[in-house]
Amino acid sequence: MSHPRLVNGFMRCALVMGLAGPGMVLAQATPAVATLPDFTGIVQKNAPSVVHVEAKYTGRRPNGSGAMPMQGPNADQMEIFRRFFGMPMMPSPEEQAHTSLGSGFIISNDGYILTNNHVVDHADTVTVRLQDRRTLTAKVVGTDPTYDIALLKVDAGGNLPAVAVGDSRMLKPGQWVLAIGSPFGFDYTVTQGIVSAVGRNLGSQDQSDTPFIQTDVPINRGNSGGPLFNLQGQVVGINSQIYSDTGGYQGVAFSIPIDIAMNVVDQLKTKGYVTRGELGVMIRPVDEDVVKALKLDSAKGAIVVSVSPNSAAQKAGLQSGDIILAFDGHSIEQGADLPPLVAMTKPGTTVPVQVLRDGHSKTVEVTIGTMPRDNNARSAMGAAAAPSTGADALGLTVQNLDQATRSQLGLQSGGGVAIANVTGPVAAQAGLQPGDVVLMVNQKRVGSVDAFRAATASVKPGDTVLLLVRRGDSSNFIALTVPAEKNG
Figure 1 (tube, rainbow, N blue to C red):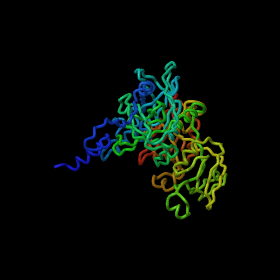
Figure 2: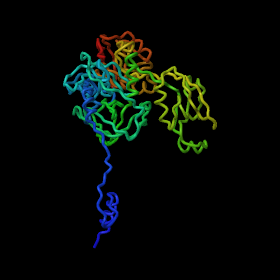
Figure 3: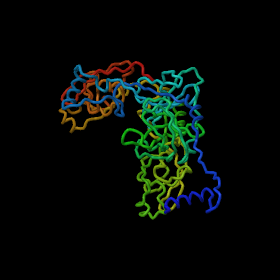
Figure 4: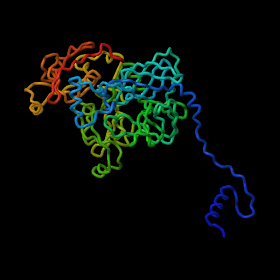
C-alpha cells in the first residue's frame, strides 16, 4: 500500500529535479544556492582598529552604577552617621573605586578614538588596549551625553590603523552588518546579523534626537562603543544599547549612526562642545483620531501642540495645530522623524518647513535656533576646557527652600538652600546628597541661591570650602577641596 504523503512529496521533488513521469530518466538538477557573506576579510582588515576601553572612576555615577548599598533596618541612619561623623565602617559607594569596560575604534592614524559617553562618564582615568596588547592612557577630548558619544585621544607615535567611515544614510533593512567588540571582556569578539530598521526612535525624551539603527547583531555588555560594519568594511554605526528584560542580548540592538557621530567629532575637535538645532515646538504623532477629527488623507506628519515663546518656530509664524509634513526637503512620515532632522541642522540655518494649516499646504521659512547645551558634557579644549570655578567647582547645584519646607525643618526664614543635584566628584566623595541643606559657606549664612552663588563665586581649583550641612536632625561641617588639576 502506498503512502500518499510520501508519494506526493516525491512527486513534488521529482518535478523540481526534472522527472516527468514513469519511465523518464532522472535529470541532473542545478540547485539555486544562496551565497552567504564571508566576513573574514572585513575582520582581518579592521580588528586592529578596534580597542578595549577601561575607565576607572571614584564614587557613584549619575546612572546609578556603583557598589551595592547597605541593607538592613538601620542602614540609612548608620550611613548618615558614618558620613557625617566618621564612623569606621565600609566605604560608601561615593568613596569606592569602580571600573567601566567597553569598546571603541580608531578613526584617524594620529590616535583619535570613538566610544560611548556612558563608558567613560565621570572617569578619573581612561586606558585603551590595542590588538597588539599595548595599553595606552587616553585623554577625553570631549563628550556629548545627548548622543552618547565620547572622543578619546591616545599618543602612540602616529600610524595607528584607522577604520574606513561609511554612510549610515545608505543603510536599508535586510542588509548584513558586523560588530567587533569586547562583550563580557572577551576581546575581539565578532558577531553578525542584519539591519532590522533604520531611524528608530526609542521613545525616551532625552534620546529623541537620535535616529538609531536597529539590528539583530548579538550585542552584550562590553560591546558598548564598538563599531558596526557594512559589507564594504566601513563603519556605519556605534553599538550603544540593547533592548532586554534580562540584561543580556534578546535579538534587539541599537547603534548610533556614524554620520551623527562624525558630526559630533568635528564639533568637539573645533570648538570643544556640540550644538544642535532647535525649532521650538512641542509635537505629537498624527494618529487615527487626528486623521478623523481633521478629515486628513493620511496619518503622515507631526502635529504642533504648542510653540515656545521667542523660538525659531514662533518667529517664523508656526502655530499650534499646524501639521509639519516636511522639513528642509525631508518628508516627515511620523512624528519621530522630525527631532533628529532639526537637531542635526546647524543653528542659524534657514530651512523650508512644509505645513498643513486649515486644510491647505504652505511652506514657511524658519531660521533654526540653538538648543541649550548639555551641562553634563565634558570637554578638554577651547573655552569649555577652562577649570570649573565658583559653585560648579564644588560639583553641586542648589535651589531655594519654600516656606513649608523651612517650617518642617525648623529653619528660620531665609536660612539655607537645598542641594538639588550632585553633579561632580568633589561633592559626591564628601557624601553630599540631593535634599541636604547648606546653611553656611565658609561661616557665612546663605539663604538663597543668589547668596550661595555669591559666597562660592571666588572658588577655584585648589581651594577648600567649608560648608555647614544639615541632613534630617543632624548638622556638621563638611570640607570640600577642589582638585588643583582636572583630568581631561
